[in-house]
Structures are given as structure tokens and as C-alpha cells.
Image (cartoon, rainbow, N blue to C red; front, side):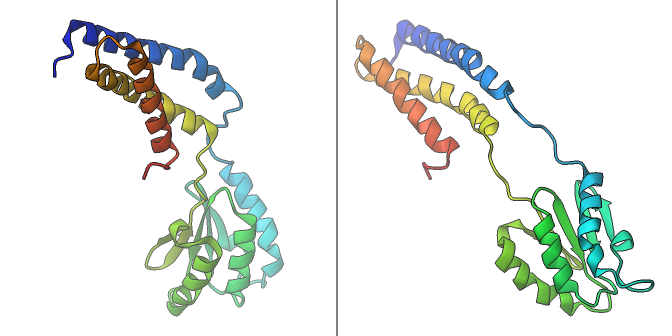
Length: 199
């Protein structure tokens, strides 16, 4: 089925118009109140040490100052020499919801990791746990904010709207209403994809 030069011109016009309108309307929305980056790792480690200081066991035992360290974009909690590792883990989970948290298990007690894993799965779910041989990492819950949704809409909806317009228009050329309906159908499909409602 041939669209002809009129159809191609219409498709190009709609494509450009949609992108320009999205840029003009949605760019200010993206710029307002957008928070970039992650919380300061040093501040997070300090807060975690203060919160876990109640479990200090003195020299030669578990201490928050020496066993809690910054690592990458989060903190590492070594459970070596800890007499109450499960209490430390529970307290650390309560203090951490925005940064990555790595629990490192002692080499002389490999079974501790296996005992701890079901507890972590019950508290945070399996999707947030990264498993390593001697450690378990809890990653922050992924929350898609408004800016991410708007960005995805800007990327997906324009081509889908143009495709819908061209597809509907090719069925009955000369019917402007079909162009509008096709654009609406493309926009709805794009929103369903962005919000994961179309799977």
C-alpha cells in the first residue's frame, strides 16, 4: 500500500511537530525539582556507624568504627567478630533505604551467610539482593520518578504517534480524523509501554 508524497510529508510534519511540542511543554517539567546523584556516602557511613555503635564489643570484638566502611556508592558492614550479627543486620537495614549496603561474612563461619540469606529475602525481597560467595549486597529499591517517566514519554511517544497517524491515514487517505485517532492510539500505546501496563 503506497502512502504517496502527501503521506510522507504528513508523517514528517507530524514527527517534527510532536517532538517540538514535547520539547517545549515537557522540558520545564523535567527541570523543576529534579534531584541528581545519590546521598553523600561519607554522611551515610557516619550515620550507619552512629546507629550501630550500640553493638560495639570493645577491643578485639566487633566495633562500628572499624567494621563499617564506605565502599563505592554505599557502605560495607563486616560481621567478623560479631556476637550478634543478626541484630546488626536488622539495625543496618532499618538505617539504610537509599544507599547500597554490603554485608561481609567471616571466613571462619561460611554457614552464617546461608542462615542470613532467608532473613534478608523475607525483609527486602529477592530482587534487591546481590549474592556473592562471601557477601550479600542490598541495593536500594528502584523508584522511577517523574523525570524518568517524562523522558521515556518524550522518547517513545513521538515515533509511535507518527506511526499511528501514518498507519490510520493509509487506510483511508483524505480523512483528517484518522490522523488524529492514529496519533492518540500511538500516545496511548507509548504510555502503556512507559508505565509497564502493556505487558
